[in-house]
Length: 599
Image (cartoon, rainbow, N blue to C red; front, side, top):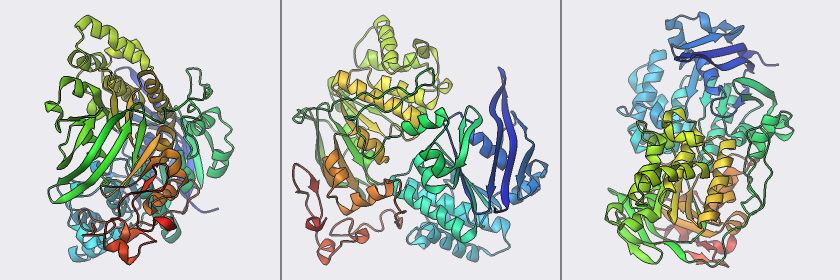
């Protein structure tokens, strides 16, 4: 048995407010040995992050903490002075948080931020700190680390930002690394690489890890043991493989049943949900759209650049009415840019968008009222798109009045109908966004998107920040609404299991180029473009971590040839000389690869 690095016994936390004290954590006990990884899993509000804040001594002033023991390497954390805590944080205990951009100082270069962490705890000169910073970026697999040191956070993708955060956290080889939802917003390949980095830390530096996440697959792939939290208490714990393969608590069974599988689609049935009594609802089979459909969206030769940096290259795309088209690819591949071009929030440098066979204006404000009503969007973070000062009823009624032309009283009635359609209570209309959970806010955002009876809805990472059980509810809801309204979806996600479940057809973007497109079944069963194979391998539960060198934006883009040639195991001299065209391998399955006969 390895010596205990962290020991928590009977930890309870409550927060004070206008309504008195509200319990957040109730009697949680856990321990982590040297070099061990413990996963803490559960829904939002279960108390996971409060446990992490208590360990780091970052609880706010209105928090009340009680515990039999809260020890790090045998020392009671609660008895440490402010000076001792500052010496401990960043040196012996480090943390990585959910939103990488928010954790980095936007006014400082990456090199300076890593270097300051080192110089604060070690008596070394600035030039040596810079050298160590470059070595740390190499450890987290950033190519051309010297150049990366001089970049600011906004110049990096989300995956690159998170690698920089991990580099800061491991700068001094901490004994304990606390990671709170570190991969929520990252694509499958970057997530796989983060797992590889954590494994390396444990193997080479004996770092202990507390990994907090609602992503069960992440916990399953990277942790030795797991503790499942519900309503502030640990309801099940043990060996990670045993708990997930043979769960005993009803809540753990529900979480696992809510996760889509790579071989499970909406045609196979609904995802498991939890009803108000806590029971798992049975899954019913459902059907997809007909094979032949009117074209709802057509992207014709879409290209776009931000300054000198090209992000989309001659994208050709067609989506049928009532169809769900899944768009996958790494961070920075151009998915969200294409979504904004379709909705008219971004003007393409070249190309056009057609809506039901008619070319529409590039900017939404120049489109006809009917065209604006027909295309709506649901974003990744509902808390950023719902006005915090307005009540939900007013937020939903505005598009009803402006897009659907309803009067005040009729709009009020329709708000109640829309709330019921997304399984929210009528009283939700009187609430403000901050009083709702993340899942409730996202359902309110979906209700707003459907207010004008759109024919097309663009969904940009609509479930990435949601718990698996809430995600199941939202995905089932989207499929229900699609069947009722015959709505077309452009569904963007980095979660391949979610895309597999939702999508009728799938497109794969890499560096702004559509490298593969076809029916969901074709894309997931192959043959595949080498990049698609990489994504599928990275998302598989039992896959070995895929080694990926993160490139600096604008630096590794080849001047000619295949955009994936530098990373492709099949690359030949021809691949570096000319860009391959998309070729139909059968039944409309398009792959852009010179070596397609060997796939």
